[in-house]
Image (cartoon, rainbow, N blue to C red; front, side, top):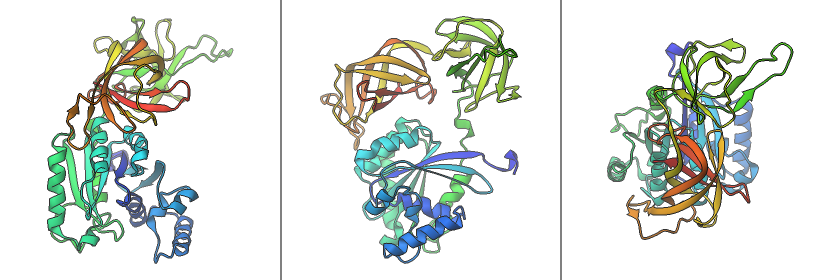
Length: 419
């Protein structure tokens, strides 16, 4: 099918509290859209029989590890791929337990859209607020709030409207403008792929129809040209003895041969000579393509540098004002040193100041509390040992994001955004 008849690729993540039905919802999407192989379905049916369940337990489709299945929980990010005639999808199914909030951060960091599930019986919980705020923090512009398990409240419209109104009150303080509400029953399939006969009062689209048609192309930053260098290509063969190319993934913007560029942080100027993708020469390149560029001049460029347009450059900074989601098991110790990983660059860093923590339920700043514990969201200041090339996250999701790594354990202890 040609690109003109489809909406391209949509990456989305699911989140919510424990037992809100995330895995069942994804299983229902795959099952009703006929995206499951026969042998997969047979395995699920057999496992369901062993658990004493009538019919296939669709949640098992995304619980990839047998240990997870035995516990009945999802403890990692389960990625799944499926397609309809209108669109291709990559799904990140993330766990609801608070101790696995880092997985939601992982899933949302590359997503175009987030699905937040709410159990119709329990309404909005702290994890609902936490995951919604993380989606906002990570710059997701599209949110679908699925009020699930409507069958357990007799498909009550009043209950659905109560939850919608409560969520709207909370989300008015989030930086997300496109929020869609859908009442569903993932277990029975109501309003997931097929319209529900049990909720005739709902006049909106099904979840799959919305996912197929939501427009995310305009979300990509095609204005600010940023090409982080990942690898300098020097074949050293007789045929290509003098070849020097710069390989990496385009973070934002559109690059073309003949463009005037500047290499940062050196400030040396040149012109793009050629852009290739494998053996193919490109007339233009844009995110998220991974390409190799050659330039007209022989200048010193290495991994961690960046090619940008001369009249549109990122900030070159050693002090970051940032918001982080703390993922470490121990509270943040401001005297500790970290490795800050940003794009293709790694620098030594330390936290110089904790400005405030954020109350996840009210979204108010708590300037009295300077203790940043696991899953807390805080605003801090970071000093780096050498300059990094960054934009504010609101302007550029790719160049405005970073992680902090504990140098002693090599574990990621924080995910952060600039500005």
